[in-house]
Image 1 (tube, rainbow, N blue to C red):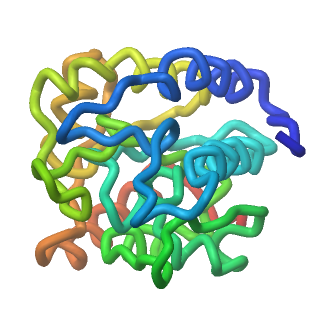
Image 2: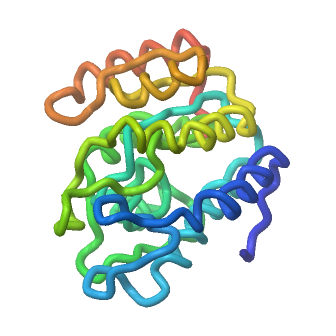
Length: 225
């Protein structure tokens, strides 16, 4: 990787990902975007690009983030092709939203994801203070259809609790926020104090913005870029 990760905790987290996440085996309905690629969908070297994107994301933090935002699982319009949690390819191309070197990996037009657009539309000015992760950091999909999303199963969520704990502990955050029930269940199982907000999908955008805005004020998190 060309850029070092300046924060020791996030550098240690990268080593954990390298050891425990990147080699994690796929199943017929759970895709590891950091290890594998589908030639008809992914560009050459896609898995390596996604690992580099995640590295660039971690390296972008020059001070410890204050808030951990936990989503449900990787979606095919988001982290499946970017390698960055809760982030679409369309956002990667917007240097105002993500001002560091990243690359899309899909063969087609860059994907946009409504959830990612809503999240970073609100949280963009707080980007350096919010670190995003998913309770299931791989892409659950329907059998035989990799361009779908499915809800993660309980055993899948529990299989990755140790990684969620590592992100929370090593990022040095003060607060955790769960996007919806699956993320809240994972944080609850770990005993991590958190606040649950409405997931912005399926008509939840307005309530999400209201709840998240209130939390930013409560936590005294101010725009910092």
